Image (cartoon, rainbow, N blue to C red):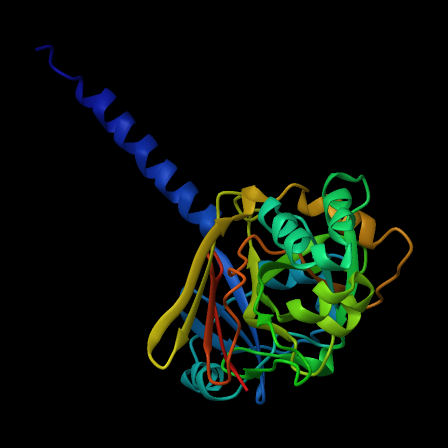
Length: 304
């Protein structure tokens, strides 16, 4: 066996170390939390309060500039605020949502609306140039990590919809991500597609959290999205998909949303669900919903 030149070996090791450092830098992220005590920034599990305006960070390149200049000195009280005084990661942003962006969602919507003659609507929008977009929530109605979400009292069939949610600047740029829970009444939407606003928009129907994730690079399309629902300590439902299963690109959805709308303080956009429980499943009070998105984190909420 030929001997390996020492200089060559050192060069190989140096390249390997450089590659590892590059991968680490690509996976570096900043987390921004809204708490009752103020905004907390976190990097590498270090937490600190920061002097910033949440809405201002959604304007232009403010968020990129802000996170790029952060130098966090760990403050135990900031970590405690994240644990004990967490709020939804939102200022005055509106929350919008996309529908039928996954094939599995297309099939589910077609099945639930078949008796009302609405299945063709969902089949058509999946392949159309224009996506389905709808208003989901004002900031005041959003529930955060550890908070309770609701099912409508006049609905008999209800599910959570786990969704990658985009933070978008006032200029229409994707500046961050969070985990979204698009609570939905399948019985109301299935009765008639025109009832969509009632099925989707009501008190406690929108979950975001636990924080705003700012990644150095776009979220990988291979990122997994997982849903688990526990009932009385037992898993009642679980499912998994990944971002790459989306038919449309994230930029395409944002482009349509911003065509004829201005958002002075930016907005959030839920990008649709690829996990749909079967027709024999419906949420119940005290069910525990856990939504995990790889490279982001986990949003946990309980049904009121």
